Every structure is written in C-alpha cells, then in structure tokens.
Length: 156
Length: 270
Image 1 (spheres, rainbow over the protein chains, first blue to last red):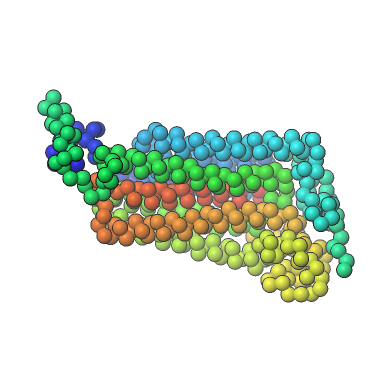
Image 2: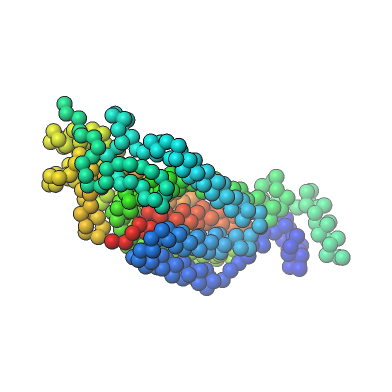
C-alpha cells in the first residue's frame, strides 16, 4: 500500500504493521529480573523443603517463563488470540499429565504389579530402586537400595 | 471525514492502481493482516512444540512419582553450576534476540545483525557447555542402553570383556553388582546407582537432546534471518522473519527454563 498517502492519525486502520516497541532499557530490566530469579532458584535448591522443593522450583520457573512470554515474546502487547493459542497448549498438557497420573494411581490400587518394573526375562521384579514413598501412594515392594538384587545373574 | 473518504478511495484504488510492496503476498490485503496471520501461525506452532515436549514432561512426572529416591540420587550427577551457567547464557541470548527484533522494528539494520550474531554465539556456547556435560556422563558410563542397564553388560563384565568405556565404572569396585553403576557424583560422593536410574538418565538425555536439537535448528533459523538482514530485506514495515525467528528462539529458552530446575535442582540437597 502507498505509505505516503496516509497521515499518522489514521494509524489503527491504515493496514501497516504497528507493533509495540519497548525500549532497550526495558528489555534489560526484564533480563535482570530473569537473572535474579535464576540465582534464587539455584540458591533455594541448596535447602531442603521436602515435597515443596518441586513446587518452589516450578513456581519460579513459571515466573521466569511468564516474563519471557509476556515481554520478550511480546504477548503483553500482542493480539489476545495469540495468548489463548499459547495457553491452550498448557491446558491440554495439564489434561494429558493429570489423566495419565490418575490412571497410574488407579492401576496401582487395582494391581500393584502394573507399576512395578518387571524383568521381561524372568518375570520377577527388576533389581534396584527403593519402595515408593507414601507421598506417591503407589505400593511397590522391592529390595531396598544396596541389597542384593532380586535376580541373580544367569549362570551359563 | 475527509480522512475517511481518502482512505476509502485508497482501498478502492488499492486493487488496480497501487502496487503491493515486495514483501506483501498477493493473498493478503495489507501488511498488518499478513503480519498478524504469520504471528498466529507461529503461536500455533509453538503450542504444538510445547505438546511435543509435553510427552516427555509427562514421562518425567510419572517416573519421578514411581521412583522418587532413584531420581533424587541420580540428579546429583548433574552439575548445578554448569546448568545455571547455561541458563544464564540462554536468557542472555533471549535478551539479544528481543533486542534484534527491536532494532529491526526501528530500522537499525546493523544493530539487528550484531544482536543476531551474539544470539547465535550464545547458542554455540550453550552447546559447548552441553558437550562437556554429556561427555563427562558418557565417561562415567551413565548413557542408558549403551552401558547403563544394558542386558548384555553384566555377562560381558563377568567375562572380563571390554565394552567400550563401560568397564571403567565397575572395574575397581568389587561389591558392585552386575548392572549397577558405582560412580562419583558432582559433589564428590561415591554413589551406587541402581539399574532403575537409567530411566532418569534416559529422560535426561532425551529431554536435553531434543532441546539441543532445537538449539541447533534455532541457530540455523537465526543464521538465515541474519543473511536476509545483511541483504537488506527487512524494514520497519516488514520484519516478520526476525520476529518469528526470535519467537522460536524464546521457545527454546522457555523449554530450558523448565528443564533446568526439573532435572538439576529439585532433589534433596546433599
């Protein structure tokens, strides 16, 4: 389209690309925030908060990802539809993981061998590992770490 | 009013009298329409990429729930400092990618080129660090399939056969059972890893490997954008490839933002 023909007041519907332009300092600020969050997540990993470890790590990761998506990837000033397309991926991912997780829990209750690792050669429980903790609610019985493996190596 | 009628005339005349700009494909009415369509396409692609990695994140969630102790023990073989360094390298490359787009938006062609070069160099630096991490784990015999958890390995070790680098692991440690791996972790502690830890290392290598493949693809895309930029193809009216190339690069960064804590950080500290 002819560009000289249009005054700047006709910005919104002149058919030209009018992306939001942030300042370099703004991007540097976002980068600074990302570095602080990275150092924070490494620092807290040296302390043990038990089951909260993964929650804290994922929370900080999500804060970082939000900064990258909103500002580096321009979603903040972009069409809302792009944000919806992007977030829909996480919705389907959540359905995928939660249903798989639920399925596994139900199977573990019905028949624990479903979630046990089995040696296909002997049909016995595969060596190694420790019983899952109560936190996961899966009941898997096997030899604790460091003991003799359940299966002796085959003698030729 | 005058403005409106002027632009209406412009629309009518648009089809016959006015030439499209070079970059505007004939099936789009305006540059803005083309730009928005390209961006939406890229975001849908990014969603599919997240779902592709999602399968691996799901596998990680399941196996970690089943074997929390094994994951906890095995994750001490990943070096937090190297992982954090790579995170900062990738975040910095995301910054330069965003600045490359900004420079393209305001028509600073040389600045765009410089930022793109820095981004590509950071990507290369990331891969170099990853190379050292991988080769250290290969050396310890933690590569599943080839050494770790390999069905034929225990028999081979008992017969004293050389199995690549795998023998180094068990050679001086009598109490190690077949298919178990004894090795020194990143804190200098000797760990006895059960064969089930191969799930952790399997996920580690596949997730970081797929991510590494994306780094290589991202580098190629940014290199192509750099060449087009040097040829002077972009302007404040048309910078879509710079924008979309940078979006792909930010996606690589996004995936790593989750991979780093999940693989390197979430276990119990020693």
